[in-house]
Image (cartoon, rainbow, N blue to C red; front, side, top):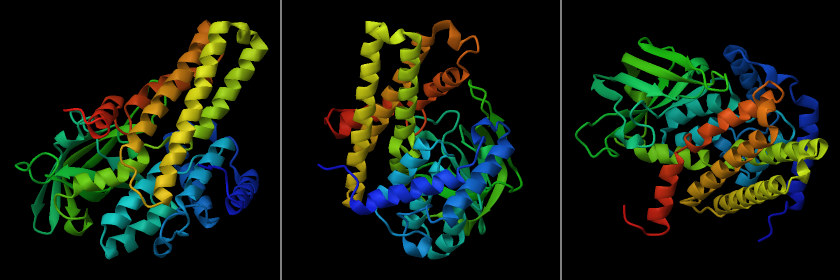
Length: 377
């Protein structure tokens, strides 16, 4: 299979690179204040939207350009390669869920604000006792007239402290089998009774949070899909979330690998046979991740569902990210802990979460065992 750019794709890539050279914001990596970072992300999303780079595979009637999913993958790749702020990952997968399951009125109301960056969204899925086993979620919604009344708690809700809206999974039928009693609500974060609290990660970044719901009243017309459709809606979203190329990670990984190699050459560490062997393994992992994602994109272009391939990509992503950070920490030794390599230390600490977010590594292995290998539960 030929994964090289077509003539049109190559021209687009050059055009995008030129635009990024002129418009990439400087110093965005050093922004630590959550509100300032959220504002930067909003401005960047709006800039990409005005330039025609946001939602390129979206249907034209919802603000997109109806191009091949290849163009979204190229955008993420070039953003990472240019060290520009990433395209907000939840835009594409929440947008896909919206245009797949929403009413026409919901699409007209919400899709423009999602794509343009005029409103920031968070994803209220995981709970303190329902992370890997999302079907066990207990946040409850009860219909009261023309409103749903929500009570419960969400955890690890990325960007929740600065978000405007929440894509929320709730249990609407406690007596139904756990996966069929879930529904999806679109909730404004300024609704009375809703409180978002930041959670600071081990690398010091407050990029996630917990959200509490105390008799939060949500208009009934803000339910996405039908009552009980929540699980299918969630699966529509997370299928895209699990791809490393969908978040620009593949280009970021290869840039980090080159930085580690350059450091090893300059420090003489490259003369260590064990280090060279592990560095070679890191290159192999990166190539396996890249080719796997290209296969996934090819399936999208052909109109085929991603299926278990998304779990393969996620597992390769976990192995690559945690592997390169282990290698860097091993090579840098005490320097990594004494302030000589703060970027690598932060990256290592954050990499521990890669086997959790977007579906844990254990869950992905179960999916592959059952759906690909045909093993029993």
